[in-house]
Length: 260
Ligand SMILES: [Zn+2]
Image (tube, rainbow, N blue to C red; front, side, top):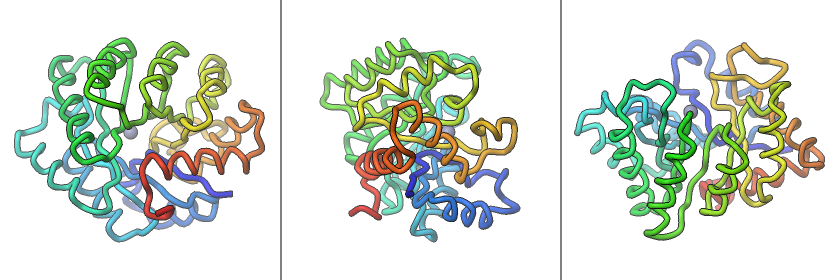
C-alpha cells in the first residue's frame, strides 16, 4: 500500500528532535511521499530546504491567513522567489479564518487572492485553509473562478456537505485529516463518502489533530494510514483500493516527481 500525506508541517519545531525517525516511520508505514506546507516565510523556506534534500518530500509555500498581519512586503517577494525552486509543488497554505479573529478579514482576502493569482501564473495548485469561514471561501472562490478553472485543494476539510459540493463543483479537491476519524464526526464522514472519486485526497496536518486512536498525541505522517483506513471503510473500498485512488489524485494534483 502506498499513501501520500498531502499536508504535513514536519519543518516545525515539534519534529526537531526526531525528524529523521519520523520520516523512517512514515516510509515504513507505506507513505511514499509527503507534501511539506509552509504557513509563513520562515516555515516556507524550511519546507523548501527539507524538500531539496529528500526526494520523497515536496514543498508548498505561502502565508497562512493567521500570519498575514505579520508579513512584511519583502516576505511576499520571498514567497514568489521560493516558488521558482523545483521542490515546490503548490502555493499556500492560504485561505480564510474567522476563528482566531487576529487578522482583519479584508487583509486575509487580499492575501488569498495574491496566492490564487500566483497559482494561476505558475500553474501550481493552491492549498486552502478554511476555519469558520465556509461562506466567505465559496464567495471568493466563485469570484476567482470567473478568471478560469480553479486548481486547488480544500485542506483538512471540516465544512458542510453544501460547502464541499460548492468546492468540488468549482474544480477543487477535498482533503481529509484526522478529525474525520473522531467518533462523533458522522457528518464529516458523510461528506467524505460523497466527494467524487477523482477529487478526494488525505493528509495529516501534523503535528496537529492526530487521528483516532492517537487523538491527543503529536500527529506524524505515518498516522495518515489511520485516516486512510477509516475513509476506505466509509467509501466501501479496501484499504489498498482507497490508497491507490487517493495517491493517484494527489500525484495528479501536485504533479509529484514520483509520477512524472
Ligand atoms: Zn496546515
